[in-house]
Amino acid sequence: MIHTVKRGETLSSIAGDYRISLAALIASNPGITPNLIYVGQRITIPGFPSPASLPFSIVVSLSNRTLTLFYRGQVRKVYPVGVGRMLHETPVGDFIIINKAPNPGGPYGTMWMSLSKKSYGIHGTNDPSSIGKYVSKGCVRMHNKDVEELSRTIPIGTPVSIRP
Image 1 (tube, rainbow, N blue to C red):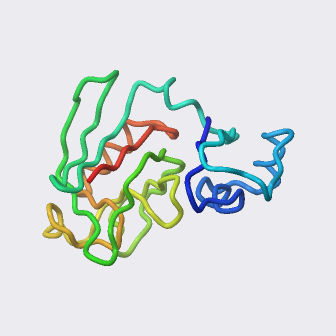
Image 2 (image 1 turned 90 degrees about the horizontal axis):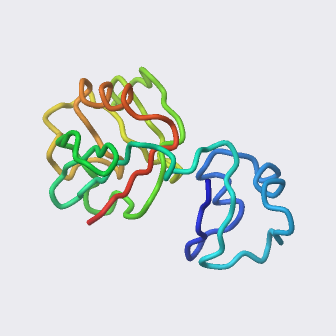
């Protein structure tokens, strides 16, 4: 998988976002100078498929509070979601699903799927009345039955585009 460096990122922060070691990231990018990366630079992330090779993709609309699942570019399903509240906005950008954790406990409901942005994910909720609202600390909340269905459907590496 290829990651394009964004403003403010370091090799360490990129490694953290993808939950891989800095050593593994450097080893996958021969010739890279760790302290001299630049915006727009393309960096290979080991262990993930190319998002273009996967049939599924996700688009989250923050203004509509929806998560749309696409299969080969066609809408397969639209789910209602809860998103970040003021001062805890959901990050806008392009990410991938990097792991899945069933039954994470607490407010995360019955499934957690990490995004390639540290501390953010798509997850269930123990408060179904929060779906459709601006209430989270930046994550994308779904009804438990919906996040379980989504998790069973998509593979690790699925691209997630979060838009205003």
